[in-house]
Image (cartoon, rainbow over all chains, first blue to last red; front, side):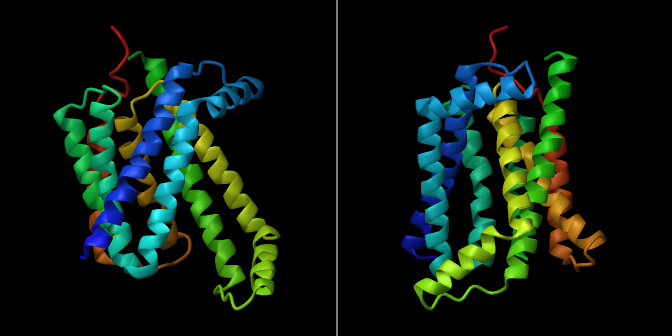
Length: 124
Length: 136
């Protein structure tokens, strides 16, 4: 693996999990959705897309998407997609240190197993 | 976490898995109908975009992925990201199973091993509390 590939893999994982963590912050600021009528849900989405966290999320997810496309332009898909399964572990670390979630050992074990399983499914 | 919160979390997770899997399957069907992409000139790009945006499969894929995004946002308004993200990886189980049993695709042994490991991982995550940040 070249340094360029390693850097872009790290960028893809960080930008994708960072984007999803920013979506989580936006939604936590809005608060628990309790009304599931269409009009109420549309109001929630409108509020979410006006928040700075959601704009950051869109920016980070776009960076993740384009860095993945760049990676795929020179590296094999059979290597790139399984390698991006590490996003689950990066997301777990972000959830712990940026969102203050309490991750038990069972949840960590589940996250690691999901990452390994996704890598195997995508490796074929 | 009370029963109703756990129930609505699981309902959202099922919808997330259904919409993301079906969205990807619809997009894949649409792109297979369109065929291999060859871009030699600007007109090729215009023709390709016209074929993409007049495909019913592609629009169904876009609709399913928008519904996925909506459910993902809603569930994150109360549940942990570290719970939702790995639990929604069940989509990686659904797509090969649909491919195998409905579309007759051959699933390699390595995929079956991966599917089993994901099932154990998702099972472990689902046994933890979906929400750990709320003040008690």
